[in-house]
Structures are given as structure tokens and as C-alpha cells.
Length: 420
Image (tube, rainbow, N blue to C red; front, side, top):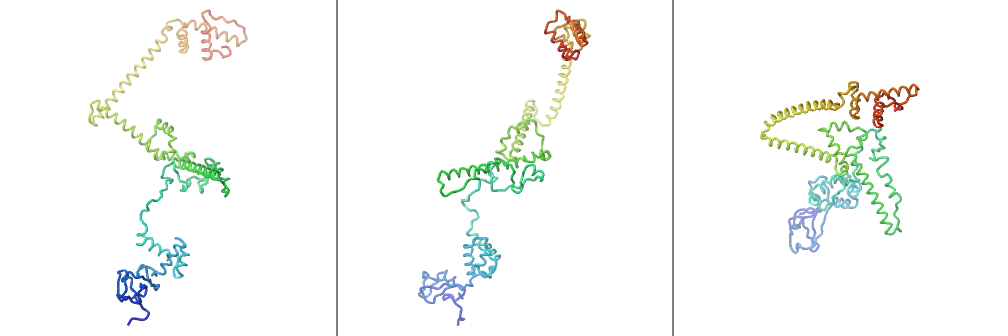
């Protein structure tokens, strides 16, 4: 005789007190979940008959071995609470499920069973199709900076922050780029009686303000990427000496200055890689030309190139010494030949080197130059002493020669400028 208060399946005679399916068309037909899912039929009962789910409240959705022993009634209350209060409001959800469950238990059960469990794996795909990609992130390129990703504050001292007017917590400066940009939207307000033209005008003001903010952020990113702030403070010289692997030539420095406008389109690393690759290309081209020169001279092995270079160096040195000796002889010959027209005239040995050059350029004999020089200096001394004198320059001395000689004597310190 069946125990009182217990229910049994009419088909397999298993106990169905926690959960059973009752036929709405046949009397006293109650099946267990296994027989109902298999479509069991007995007597006048057919599988297509209507049914009613009878739950005693003690049925566990995840089986008796599930952690916490959550009943089907609690599972239903949990799903109602997640829909009503939203994900994350665990305290309100725990109060809705019942006093027997804490917010921590509610959170752990929902995450473990409905997100990381089999149900979550079956419902939540690994890759979400048609996901919208944010193209304004910093990795999208230097021309599309993000206004939502905050940058870390600059690593500078308090005194340097005061010098720059830098506010590290806000990553702002007291004087920003386009300081008056906020005036575009400071007076905007949305009114219900605005017509379409006024609304579009206000939208244009907002769009202009956003563009100015993007340009301001872009300039900040460039200053950070190229270390312009440490360069302004004079702190990047030692860092550059440590990071530079090779010495930068004068031509490369000039080229870097010419290509400075490209800073806004390329990151600092890309810019350095560009010049590093250009330097490698230059070295490779020089090596190729050197190898081609070896080939033209009949050298086919690298061992022979060392001997060839040593012989070429000796030849060039001999040639250089020979040209140097020839140039010295040419200078001496030229110097002697320069005064060939006046060196045999009387008074030549009394002249200095500069006076020899002057007489040679004026085509003036040394004796005549000494005479003119003596007269000019004598007149100059008499004038300084206050003695009136009349100039007695020779007749062969024209105005051009007189002016040239006076300028020479003045520059040499024989007479003062007032006398000339």
C-alpha cells in the first residue's frame, strides 16, 4: 500500500512528489518527467493530451548534486529578480528570492550556473557578430585620437608643473591650445520653441567645439610621443645620448628638420625607424658600390680586397704628398714672380711685404713710392705741430695714386685719419 501523501507515476510507479505532469483530459493520470518526455500512453491517455505541471517546490533544476540546493521556486524567483532589478543589484535580488539567500550566494549561483555553466555557454557565443568597432582609439592612428581614454600624468616635479602651468590630476594646462574654444558652447541652451534653423546652428557649434577638442588632444599626444615637454625642460639630452646607437650626421639633422611636418602623421618610433632604414639603405648602397669597384678591378674574393685597399691607400698617400710638394713650390715661384717687375729697381729692399704688393699693383717704382711716402709723412708731422706747409707732391702722382697711397698709410698707422 502506497504511503499516504506521496504521489507515484501511473506508468513506471516512480515517486513523483517533487515534480509531476498531470493530464487535463484524463482523470488520475500523473506521469514522471522521464515517462512524459518519452510520450508514455496508458489506458485512454494519449501523448497529445493537454497537461499541467505540478511542482511541490522541492524540485532542483540542476540536480541534487548542485551546490547550494537551489529549488525550482528559488530559480524562478532569481530569474524574475534579474529581469526586474538588473545584473549587479545582488542585495535587491537576494531580498526578492527570500531571506534564506545572501547577496553573495545569489551572485555566485547566477554567475556559475547561468553565465559560466552549460546554459551560459550554449546561449552566449564566443564571438559576437556585427560588433561595432571603436575606430577612435589611440591605436587607430595619430590623426584619430580618443577623447575617452585618459593618459597617465607627466612624470615631472612640482616646480616643473608650476613652470608649465600643468595640472596632473586633470592632465590639463592653465593655457590650452585654442583657449577660447569653450565660448562656442558656453551660451548654448535648448529651448522648446527653437525652429529647425536654430537647432542646426547649435549642432554646428557643438561640432566645431568637438573638433577643437580633438585637435587639442592630438597636439598633447604628439607632445608626449616625441617627448617635447622634457625637451623644453632640458631633460632629454642625457636620455638621447643613452638611446642613440649611432652618431647622427649633419645631413641627417638637416633632413630631420625639413621633415618635421610629418611628426603629426607618424609616431616617434615610426619616424626613428624611417631614418634608421634610410641609414641602412645608404650603407648598403655604399657597400654595393664598393663591391662593384672590386669587381671592375678584377677582385673576386674578399681576402684579396684587404691587400687591394692597402695598396690603394699607399698610392693615394704618395699622390697627396706629391701634390702638396708641388703646391708649395708653386707658391714660392708665384711669390717671386709677383715682384719680378720691381725687384731689380733701386729701393726694393727698403719696402715691406705689404708695400711691395702696393707698388706692384700700382706699377710704381720703389724709389718714387719712398719719395711720396716721405713727403706725406713730413707734411703730416708739420700740421700736427701747427707749422703751415704747402704740399709738394711730384707731378707724376695723380689723384688715384695719391688716394691709394694715403689709404694705405692710414691703415698702416703712419698717419691719422684726419690727415688723410
